[in-house]
Length: 373
Image (cartoon, rainbow, N blue to C red; front, side):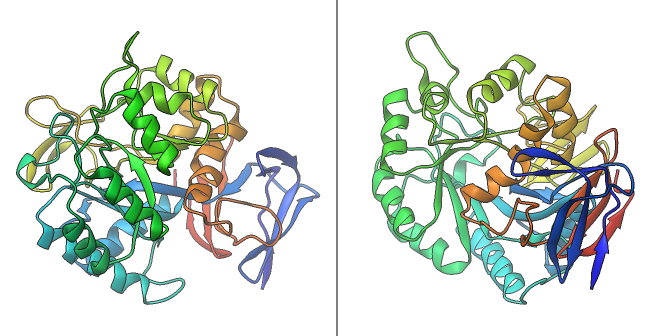
């Protein structure tokens, strides 16, 4: 089955290509055809950090809850994602990992909604000094036996850890041997320790600037080490809350092509204000800001697609903003078939209107949402 998108342009390999896009058999067939309408076609968004969405906390939800979250994500333009599990009791984490494994084994397209690419474990091997809202009682120093138990429970694709902890190098090596992406985060590491982890094979930083030591003149920490290492993907939350505009400009000015947008979404994302829980911790949401009672930020309630116009308003070219939400995260996961709108690529696509709001979402060539914005 073939169809035309009816767009004025598409972003292909980081370039704006005038013309329409044709789809056939679930893949992109042609680009640059005679324009038939308005809007910009981009690849489906790939979100590497989703704790919850649409009223669902993925750590504790059942199959129906995961389906609800996946469907809500899809309507915002996220066609693939990593469910993200923060620090919790091992039994809770392994149960969620087993659920992800079961849902993924249903095959492609699998359960309704955004496609699960694996799980991101954000903890428990994180710094007691940079916990954020992670429960301190469940934080652990690196433990190979616990790691093996978690890896055996389900499809771990990415792990955030603090490289300064005793035994972190051994865990990093075990993860790399299994092809799992290691990201430095929730860390108080000095720059030299972070740099050593990057040389050893850690390939990303989880929410740069957040839950780590600040950038100082003679102690640049993880932030400085990451900004000067072009091999490292800089994951960042551009929701208007987590980062000052100057730091967003710094990241995208320094790390073109390797900046990666993530939502760090939690259950109340796209549901409005109110009181919620995250891993059992009470969270309040007001004016787009989710916090614990002491004011600590507790993830984001904004969809990742909203970061694209926000970046454009800050002077980042649309092509770079789109790359950070599509090709860059797909590349970090080694998913060459995702994050691209080139001919032959899987037809996971979003049509943005002139305000850069999703007007339509396609998954494997099927129209799955209209008027998503």
